[in-house]
Image 1: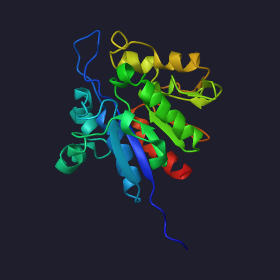
Image 2: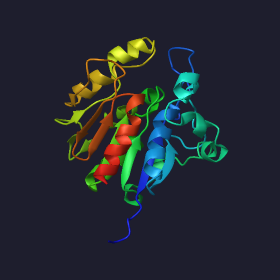
Image 3: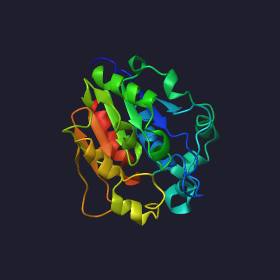
Length: 230
């Protein structure tokens, strides 16, 4: 048997650290990065962490609560200086090329609702798709898919996807703070939005090379789906 080839996966995070209409702080939902990162690196693949603007990645303080930190090893990663230092000097999306990676993963956190509608990110994701590579996202990360155009039409048109639902937004108490309803916006692009009846249940939707997860509980399962696709 031949030697297993290591793949390079690009993980994109938000650079937005606060809501525009409210005083709440926001940013990356840490577990949505760590759960994915741990799953793919433990089998030998590399993950490069980047952000919209580059530099320091803001963390959503809610993702550092005791309950969430206990999930899936996030607390261990938060205490890992070497790992956390990776979030201090991230490259910017505009400085990256799809040909240098095998897959892209759009992390979540409410910050993405404010800066993932980004032309450079849309172009980058489109390049991944055109090059036959895997495009994945979790929770609010699919906001980065909304403006992606491939051959003059939305990437999402006719494709099955998921993402943070409006009932989940209400449960999180952020329905009056987010700039739009992500699930509705996905459907407006022609996507076939899928969610389970129970909010916050793990849910991953795979449509060929497009892999999406609904909420923080789905990040590890997205990683597993990406590994299978690789």
